[in-house]
Image 1 (cartoon, rainbow, N blue to C red):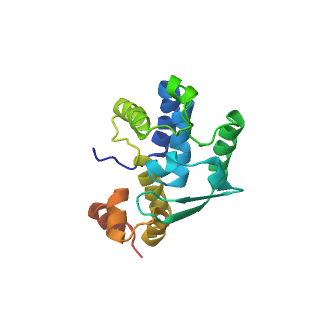
Image 2: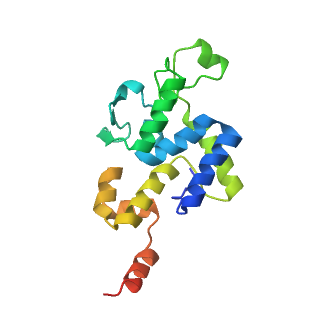
Length: 186
């Protein structure tokens, strides 16, 4: 699997959303926008059922770790979720597959990781970015760290076990840390 990056420029984050919508679908853009706000792994994001959402909270068991994620949804995520639910009131999954014949005639299933990976790769290639399904999670972690400089807080959000793993994951290198020491004079 190719290494992907956190998207560090806010304008690029918005452009990715726009390009996913016009090049692929509104659903792919929704995955990007909600994924940025939830910081879940793609397998967990795609498996969200509307029944997992109670009021302003999402509660799911993470597939990779078995840990429970109990996430208070922010207003932006809630806005997207409510619109999707209003547009597709019979759907079970937040990101339900519904366009192909198999989806129409079969049991409800979420979109496949493969289809999201392809859409993100297409837009990433167009923008010359290493964009993938982990980019949403990495991007949220990166921006939380840049805003707070609190790696412990980022670790908790991503449910990581060590600071080193989290720093590498969000793309904070020793050069970044050195720069912070040089630029902040007290």
